[in-house]
Length: 144
Image 1 (cartoon, rainbow, N blue to C red):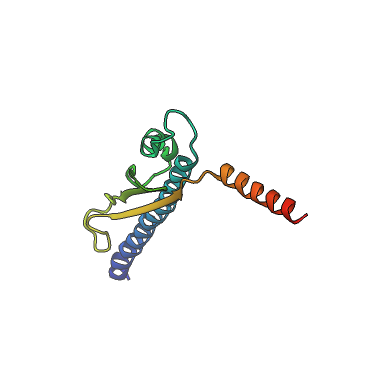
Image 2 (cartoon, rainbow, N blue to C red):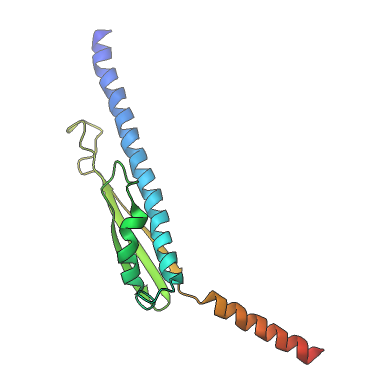
């Protein structure tokens, strides 16, 4: 019984620790996906004079504010922005580093890296809605 307990108990503890590290990975990946989209969306609708034609500058200025301190168990994400025409793509990457347990048998040697991206199109919704309403009004006047 002592021999079984000396083998099984450490293995069970290690499995629990790996599950905890994996939840850090999943949590960080989900939050980074959300934050990447928030940064892309806010850059796409930004109307301030400072960043009107510079979504990359807007994302760089607002990254620390949006990311905050919610990435426990993970490193602070690194965020990159790419503008492709009217599309703004924000990509973030981070990693879960598992420093506990040394080199125990289930522990990943390098940790888990994760990447998430969010994209939004830079559209002028108000201008578009006015155009549609104007065309609708013209169509009703020409029929009536």
